[in-house]
Image (cartoon, rainbow, N blue to C red):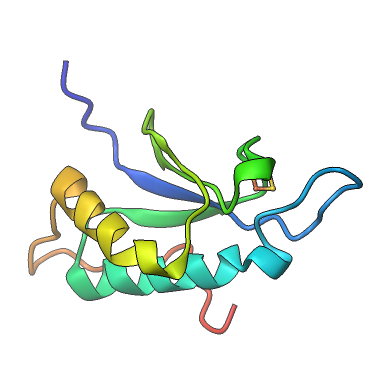
Length: 111
Ligand code: FES
């Protein structure tokens, strides 16, 4: 059965590490990745939005992301992965028509 629910790219931006637990934010820079992905989605009119969350329970393998609902995890993401992720999202989600307004929710300029 086809899942028609809107797709979201969940990006862990948790900046708080623990004694034996690194985090995706902070030194791993996932907020910068989220910003770049959001900008790419808007520029390419990809019908998906970035949703910043605080932990995907993959802390040791971060920066962690996941396409929701029900997508695979993307782990150890770096800036060089962004074009491929955008290509995958475009193939999965399609692009918005000219009549549709880009979704800027979840986009925090300068964040
Ligand atoms: S801090 Fe990012 S997955 Fe846990």
